[in-house]
Length: 228
Image (cartoon, rainbow, N blue to C red; front, side):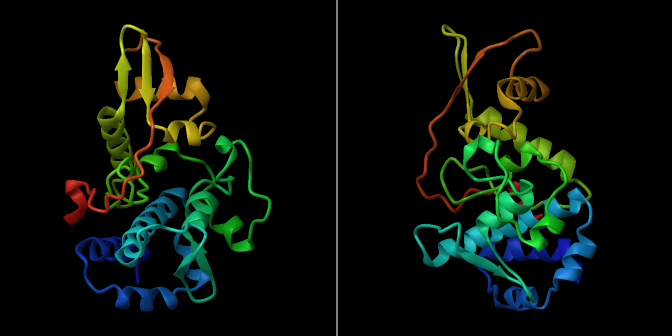
């Protein structure tokens, strides 16, 4: 079984409301060794864990009105992981969910140390969906197009979200940029990101503010690419 293709099919099944029992059974057969062997590079790690995270968010909301991010949701052959462990442990390189990204987790499992990404990629924050109205749309990622697709979802989310108060020269960016301030490189990193994605001109330096986050439940926020 190819792990990347598995998560793509799993995410589509979760989105379409199909039976996910066969996928959960397959997950139980995936060993820690297989994960570590097939997901050696950051690109593979990001594709697998982003797709898996988004699939489990959709599955959890089928029977619940609120998520518990500390509850185990992904059960493999010898390990089990929560949404927090996937996001902050693996995809953010064992960073604490608190502290704006400046602090590392104290207790880290041996699996997490081996499975986590080597380098934090702030674009991941525009790829993970927690079921809230302000979350980025769910997108099915592939290994072949990951870099381009992460750029695409980042730029689209920023364009759809930002609010510019021209008379005050204040540009309000998604609150994700505040929660994970260090991941984005602070104010200078946010400015670089805005210029990289043509949100502001190279010679413009607005003050940065942060938008409120709408926690209203929305589990139908999908990219049009979801069925590709």
